[in-house]
Length: 285
Image 1: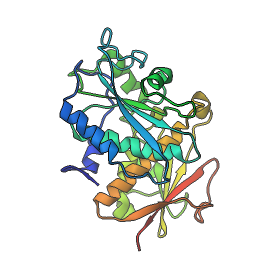
Image 2: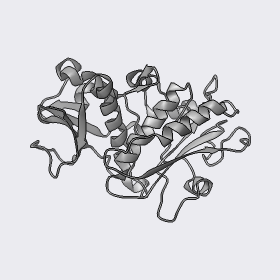
Image 3: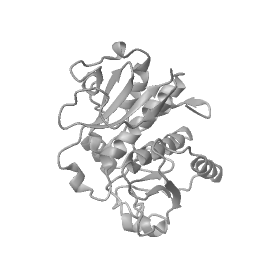
Image 4: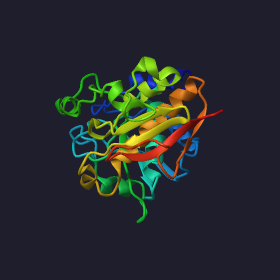
């Protein structure tokens, strides 16, 4: 996939989480392009209905963007995602929200995935949230400040987002007994590297991937007790959706065609506990 003239792999490498922004509205033409991109989004892999709104913020008091507990400073716009909870909506949400995040990156704008450090009540009022809807995540959108705030710098250091797990710890050949290295991944090497670079809640990187002749199979390695912290949403399944988007969009940009399929059982792969099989990407024959 290419956003305008820039390959998605370049955007993935360039994107960073920013919490410090200049206190100004983004240009109207950029705002219109974001809204147009949202309106043109493809149906996500599992067919969920999603809503996205770009919400304008009032002048931030003492530079703090309302509804973010002081974590975000200066941003005048927030991208808000809205869903009705269902079994596979979290992966669909992560998949589509990340596509918008990367589109904003291509426009030269800063963003930051936020799954916990924002007020769902505040943004729920801003988007007229229905009783059966939830907001899984939001992201500020704007021109980044020349220098990160102290709090922003602390978040970067605490998350360790610059320290990704090694390739061989995340990706495997045929089963979980044989680790993959980039050279051994063949045509999938670059797309898997884009998965490795994907953002995730607390930088947990919960995806594990097995490559076989039949396809590329995604498994979830949950962090014990993590879901209890955020009972309304499944953040680690959202992370899986982000990884799925990185893989399929990178594969497409490299000329590798395929589609997502949810199978009833793991595809003939012995699965160590406590991994969960989630989905397979099957290449076109």
